[in-house]
Length: 604
Image 1: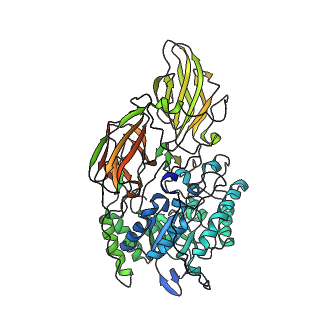
Image 2 (image 1 turned 45 degrees about the horizontal axis):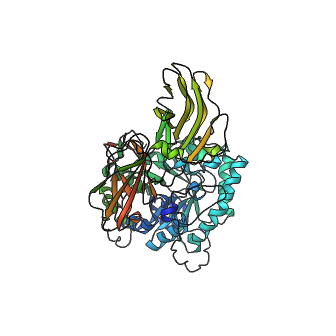
Image 3 (image 1 turned 60 degrees about the vertical axis):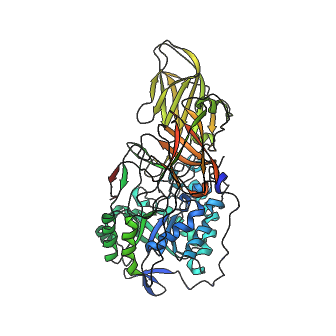
């Protein structure tokens, strides 16, 4: 399977020197007593912000961590995305972008503690909630004590946890807390599953404080908590309710205080004012609570890693995960940053680190997009996979993680016939021979008219996964054509399949078209951050020097893609676009992002 990050960052990685061995302490760094967190015998507060290493280029990890420390945080919180490390079963990677040990050590070098939330499920608006597609494709009972599921989790923990255990505070490292699962009480009720995860962490050497995190209802807390782990909360405005639901002598903590929100394609850009966010943080601190701001720095859903929600219809998440966070997608610091710095400074004995300057950006520029190959040229040049099958196969059956799969079959049809796709997940571009018939969507239109005169030909259906669902009962749902393709009441049989690689498509000359591949060259004096826009483009994917930045879509709200400085080269840079519906004429470098029309939104 092609790795969308390999070309850019998965080569040899510089590593920090291992810290000097330290004798384990008599116990974990943190515990709780009489409603307070205790650190080595003294009251303590976790003042944390979330930064996900998998959403930030590794060359920028240290910069973002230093910005977090300057905001007044004493801790960084990160999920561990299982599917980011084990894209293919048994091939578990911790190199390059996936070097979580390096990220944790960098946090310690900056002076931050680390709160690790190590999966197996993370939600996070991340593809499939972090669960590998190859597992959800064969196990029905995810997030339960189903033996097949737990066997896969155990194998993953056997790889991950021995890397985290030496980095705990008890061994001189920065990890002070570890979370079990994530918001399990929202949908789950299998207590044995949580016990298995808890015991698995302990058995593999985790000695630091364990936590759970759930929404602020008594039902969620009941089903998401497990003995031996401190219950924490997730909310946007629920301090009073959290105080009411706090259990026994546990300390009050919000593990996700939603200071902003993510965006879906086709909706407005969600923001939350500094005053609103600051009010909730202030209320929590006034109650003696600890906090982790979600997100402190959101970063980017590079490649095709974005997740999706489902609320009557699919709601795919955009490429940006800026989340209106205090530290912007490119590291810029906004009014929320300064409000939080003023709020958190009194909790530190000394001066906070100096505020870093905003990152430098490329100057505005543009270059023509030159069409080189049609969409059909691109997909027909790919090899078929899996032989011919009577019925269309799913992405999971084909071993396709995300992106595009091409379905082809011979078809004959009478006059006035209609083509229908049953179980389309998620979007399809349909051709008959060389003629484009239209676009279908799982929630809008799943049928279209064939040529009125009747006839025969080769049906080509290019199916796009818009993002795997990361939250709710549909987490783990498959992609592709889940059912059948029919002409009238008759099944179409005899399917072949082609998986479109996630690497940049071949830009060799072919038959230019209004859809398909186009190429632009951008010359820059030095590698700096940039925002790329594709005016007139319809729906596509973008590669910068071979790295898949993500998707654009004219329905918005996101209008620019973040292209971080480490991906640029001094001199010539190649931008490759694959547009499914209609190419624009140019690529533009813009000096600031455009996330679309804003809408105040506060998570409950």
